[in-house]
Length: 355
Image 1 (cartoon, rainbow, N blue to C red):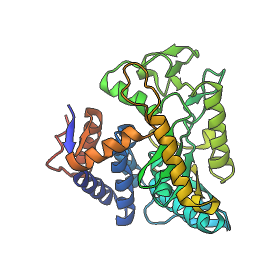
Image 2: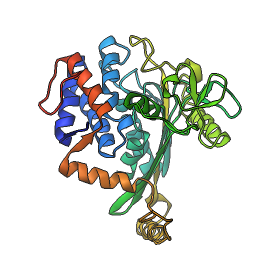
Image 3: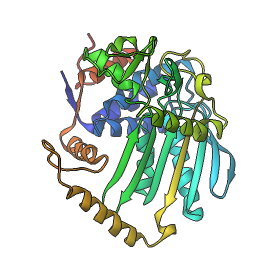
C-alpha cells in the first residue's frame, strides 16, 4: 500500500534522520533536496528509498560529514574535486556548481570528482545546470554489476549518464539513464514487491537470461543497454569519471550498500556545463528548441499512445502534481523509511510503523 506525504514533510524527515546520524545541517539539507526531488519525479528507485543505507554509512564513518569537497587541481575550463568521502550528493552539487561557474567565463567546463560515493539520480545535477540556462551533463561510475557484451559476469558498473537542456520558460529536456538495460534498483524493487522481471534484465551465472530477481547481484549480472552500445557508454563514463579523475575504477570501487560501512567507497563522477549564450544568442536557441519540441509533439502517435513526449516530460508533470497533492510513496519505499525511522528513533505522523 502506498503512503502519501507532503513534499516538505518528507524533506524534514530526511534532514532530521541525517542529523541524528551525525551529518552536518548543510549536508543534510542538500541530500534531502536531491532525494525528495527525485521522488517527486516518480523515480523512487533513486530517491528517499536509499536514505537508510546512506545513514548507516554516515553513522559508521564510511561517509564523512566533518569535511567538505574541495578543488585540488584546476584550469580555466576544468577542475578536479576531491570529495573527502562526503555524501555523494554534497560533492556532486559542489562539482556541478564549479562547472557552471567556470563555463560562465570559458563557455564550457568539465569538473571531475574522486573520493565520492553514490550520488543518487544523475539527472538532478544536470538539472542544476539547466536551471541556470546551461546544458548540463552528469555521470558516475560504480562497482561492477553489469555484464560486458559477450561476458557472463559483471565487468562495469551500471554507470549512469544524464543530460538536461534548458527550454526557455518551459521544462528542460532531461534524460537520465543507466548504461545497463535497467538500473539495479529496479531489480531490487521488483524482488521486494514480489514482481516478475523481464527476461532481458539480468544474466545468471552461466550467462543465460533469467527472470529470477533474487539472483541479483550475488549470482547474476545486469545486461548492458543495447548490448555493445551500453557497454561502450559505460567505458566512456569510466574514463571520464574514474580514470581521468584519479577515482577508483571497476572492482576497486567499494559497494555502498553491502561493503564495509566504515570504509570509503571511492566513487568517481564527472560534470559538464555548456553556456548556451556563449555559443550564440540565447533567444535564437530558445526559439529553435521550442520549434523542435512542437515538431515532436505533432508527430503522429502510435496506437494506444496519446502524445509523443520529450524525455522527462512525464516526470515534470508528476513533480507539479506532487508539489500540490503530495508524493505517493510505493510500499517498498515506505518499508525502507519505516526501518530508518526505527534506526534513528524518529516517527513522523504520516509514516506507518515498520512490520
